[in-house]
Length: 334
Ligand code: BT5
Image (tube, rainbow, N blue to C red):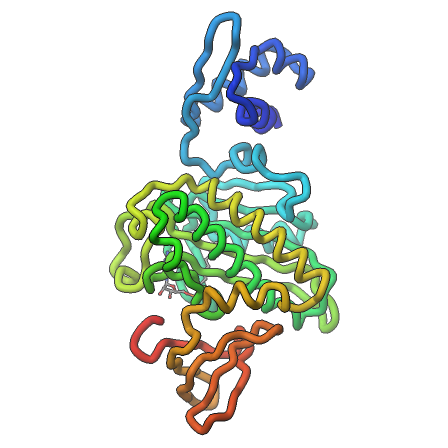
């Protein structure tokens, strides 16, 4: 794709690059380059053009388009290609539909807004345009279905790391406040900035595909009544506007690394320490809601399967598998 290639070339240098060089290196006509540059201008990229020298990008807009992301992905990354939508019902739904039609492992579905964003068990996910990241990664891992819940934890640790990293750049004192609420929420200063919804299609002994959906509130300034007491955004917590593509790319790097560890060992042993160091539940009282009743206990951390270890009042420990229960802090959301 021409726009991706042009962005790749201009991004990797501080020098001006002439239209002629771009044409030659990409093997395309001047008109084609001119057309692509104009499209990029319309999308909000600002170019500096100097006669006899060429182009340079002076300003990058806050976009999460195919060309913006693909022009920055590493060759070795888990994300291989990006499908961008201005609006979609749910990127998880889109990923599942495309997966049924043969979409490849490593396709990232990302949307500016969702009309039917979903949380777990039919809950709603608020996904307005312009301020957040609503994306779903399609994977086709060679694993049995029992491993799928672990992917949620890998995505959580990667998202938390990415968020902490961009927030450190923006506002150094905030990053220590980035925490994971088991199993799938990222909270900053106790408020939810990111949720993860993992879904899969599988047979008894093999996974057809897994879709990992992430919703991240980045530059959101106002939240609707239904979530205003629990939700926040990276902007609200740091006071800095952060470019959404930066977070997507930081997530991509961290996820690629942790996913590789996971595939090597088929457990979470290499992820566990980092996950537990960010886990907000540790040492806190939690209420575990199970089908056959509730109980309270102290959360101890997660084991190598990603289960939450909870010590009951009688001292015994139970391991709670992700997806089976809902864990609520005793005194509120965390
Ligand atoms: C989640 O569910 O946290 C998973 C959210 C996953 C969203 C992504 S966006 C891309 C992809 N496509 C989708 O359709 N979904 C995924 P859960 O733990 O069940 O939490 C849902 C609850 O979070 C809701 O009941 C609200 O209380 C709260 N909530 C809804 N929208 C929110 C938002 N934008 N920010 C913070 N909290 C929100």
